[in-house]
Amino acid sequence: MDDGMDDDIRALYQEVILDHGKNPRNFRHPEDAPLEAHGNNPLCGDKLTVYVRLGDGEKIEDAAFEGRGCAISIASASMMTGILRGKTVPEMERLFGAFHHMCTGEGEADAAAAEEFSDEMDKLRVLSGVKQFPMRVKCATLAWHTINAAIHDQHDATTE
Image (cartoon, rainbow, N blue to C red; front, side, top):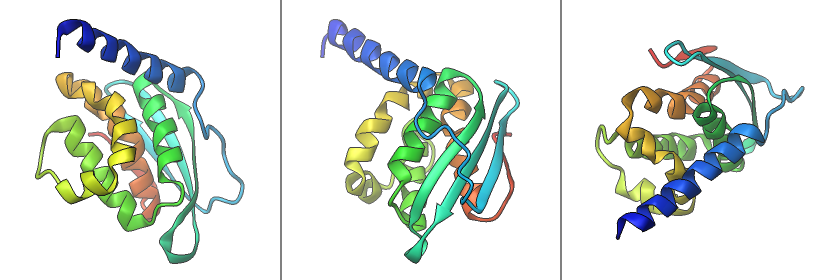
């Protein structure tokens, strides 16, 4: 792949992040969401509240968020809430693991999860550039830590 192609992909990724950052999807407080957690990234000042409603079979029926933060954290929350709707809690946990590995390179890669969720991982790939900027990894993963906390009845999540 030549550098021009890399620049095109980088520009596209930036456009997607800015679009979700400026026009976040699922930015609301659903009245019927019994689970919520507050996420905090003190390094960047990102503060999110994630709301979740689970249905039969631990299926995520609704996921939404409110808060403020950098474009990366808002974009990540926006994409995450859309991607996780309809997934079960175990699917969310495996997808979170695959996403976290993509952003950090840490831990064992779960090839089966990456394969199972290839469409979702393709969408989330726009956030993978944070791997080059360790401080920004926390921006990209904050919403995921927060929804995980909400589902497991912990009310606070932090990147610290």
